[in-house]
Image (cartoon, rainbow, N blue to C red; front, side, top):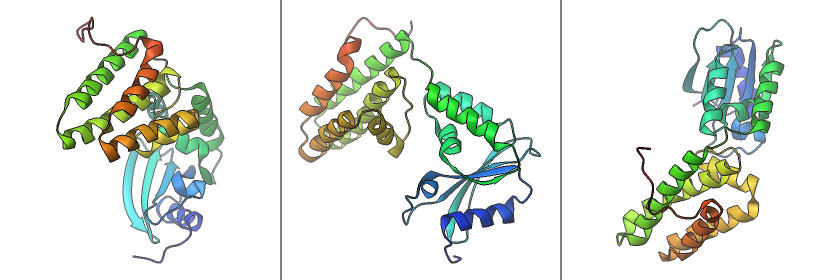
Length: 236
């Protein structure tokens, strides 16, 4: 492996080496936020109007694992629309909060679109969607409480944590995320709630006691009618 350069220098070299004719490039992720760890990679978004289709590629160079997300000057909009629909602002956040590596005049419009999308929030959940989500959360809670298998309970709890976090964020029209971005999003929205949420699940993993999780779920669902035990059909 090559000697590891600092993130900004490595990113500039990557653009010069692999995308010298691109119209713009942005360094994103932990490297752009100054939170690099030994396992961090470089997330780079590249804009090249000569391309017909977007693509993603992974490779290693200059001592770094690298993820490049390559778009032309319109293909990113499809991902913006998908992220808004799914409630996960992955690409808009990367573009809006990243560090510009190169700009031939195309990035201001794209970054302005990303910032506006982040500010507006994801699509509002319909009442039917809220009902669906309550049903699945209730089902997971019942599974967690009823199971006598420790392995099953660990995995059920993980699914439940993600469902509950999503419910809190989306019903308050906040962006969600996956993996580490879910708890980051929850903390950004309500630090006290996120801390209590983590304590409830941490307590379960240490003691196998589900009561704090049950209380947390009840407080989250109560404004929307609480747990959904009956009177619901997925076919409707």
